[in-house]
Image (cartoon, rainbow over all chains, first blue to last red; front, side, top):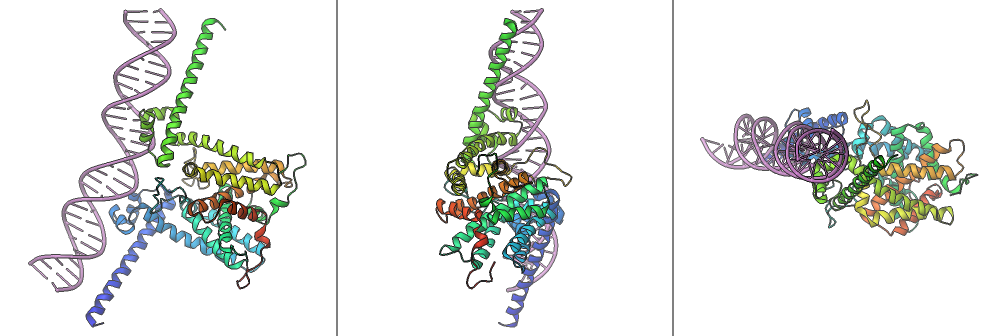
Length: 221
Length: 221
DNA sequence: ATAGAATGTTACTTGCGGTAACGCCGAGTC
DNA sequence: GACTCGGCGTTACCGCAAGTAACATTCTAT
């Protein structure tokens, strides 16, 4: 590569770097607005926060869902890191699962606006099927991604037999859904301490439903 | 009550009956549109399906969320009936739990559009809190209601100790969330038969995660 | 100087949820 | 019959949002 071509390539890199930096600034502005106003924030408000006008946002992110996907990516990466660290702690399996559930609840409690944003359904690209809309891809991206990540961890660490990958995924998604729905209810009602809920959900995963006695005067389960 | 007052009361009843009948017709039209187009269907499309114009819808239901709440009520009642019947079947506890998970998966598989509609978050009345929005009440009404219903059943049928009601609710919401997230993933990808997924989720509830062996060449869980 | 690329703005379109004003009809009252 | 009221319906409109076309400016390369 000659001197001139080298200079050309360097300038293109500089430009790409500048574009990425700009994109980051726009995402940070979007973050501030969404955390303040919720996922219903308007593109105009986000643009104003970034000191630009709307078409610039569209140029960088395509449309609102593209912007929100990029924003969700940042938050999801952070949450995943937290959960993975909790699962990797030293201790018994029960302790590690409790630490993970606790990390999830701590995260949603500490930043409920982030949580709400991440749970907001986004229209997925390519969502149209012959039914007119995709009926199975509507859940929040965070849930899917958490489920797949947890499944990967379970599948590589446990001996689940010949259908290991499949079982791990069913469990991964199931456990994430359990945390999600119970966490959402708990965040809304604060019926007990976080520690109690962690303990109760871990009991559920540890099979306590199977072994609990029937109530003395009930029809039994 | 004299003859005239009696006639007056009868006419008011007739009118209320006519209003309810009309309301039902409007809900049925809304149902057709939403199942065809998804929850993003416009009020105008719904009104057109019913052969009226928008303000009539608003007169009956207040606003779009009111219409959607009424529609969700109908579908949720039906699904709850199905789940309750499955839980009441004769058999072991495991069989009954499997039947319930199976009933849920069968329902979402048979009517994915209904499922999508029911899972669409709605803004709850009185959702504003001092944070500017309610961070814990955003999940789909169906999930909350299923969780509470299952909690009531668990709490009355199992002996869960002094905190029975609280534990039952944590479990109820957790189990519903598990079915939801795993069901959503399964509906989107069809990775296995319904029977397999039922079995795998029931295993999860039966504590298999706790007793599964570590993988031979993994770091363990 | 010219052309192209990148970055930015303004003005606008379309569609949505929701609402005000009005019309018509039937029933009741005088 | 005339009038009023209530219920059911329409039309026209508003504000706001997402998204887009057209244009301007600046910088760089030829």
